[in-house]
Amino acid sequence: MDIRSLGSDELDALLALYEHLHPDDQPLPARAQVEAVWHSILASPAQHCFGLYDDAQLRASCSISLTANLTRGCRPFAVIENVVTHADYRGRGYGHMLLSHALAFAWEQGCYKVMLMTSSRDPATLRFYVSAGFDPHDKQAFIAKAPCN
Image 1 (cartoon, rainbow, N blue to C red):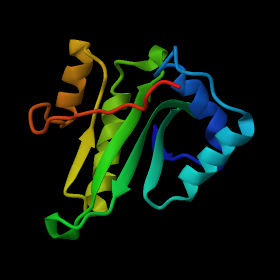
Image 2 (cartoon, helix red, strand yellow):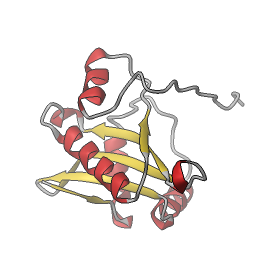
Image 3 (cartoon, helix red, strand yellow):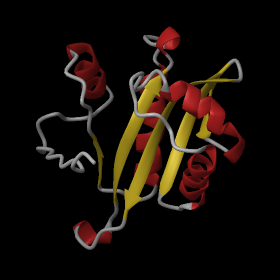
C-alpha cells in the first residue's frame, strides 16, 4: 500500500476513479481544459490530491485544499473533497487510510481544523466519516450553487 500525491501523468487514472464518485457527473470539457485545470491544481501549493495505490493501481483518492486564515492565530484550515474509493475495493480500509493521511498532512501544515462535506444520506457513508474522525454536529454547512444556465 502506498499513499502519495498524484503526479501530472496520473490524470487519466484519477478521472477513471472519479467515475466511481459521480457516475452521472456532467461531461468533461475539452481535454485541453481538463489538463489545464489539472496542471493548475498540481502547481498550487494550497491544493493537493492524494492517491492510495494497491498493486500499483490507484484505488482511492481525495483532494485537500489549504486556506490561509487571519483568525485562530493565523493558522490555516483545510477542506477535503472528492473522497472516492473504487467500488470494487470498498470495505478494505482504504478510505480510512487515505483520510488519516490527509488529516496528518493538514496537521503538519498547522491547520487548526479540517472540514469535509458529503451529499450522501447513506447511513453507512455517514458512519464512515464519523469513524474517520469527523464530527457531524460541530458546524452547520450551507451550500450555494450557481444558477442553471
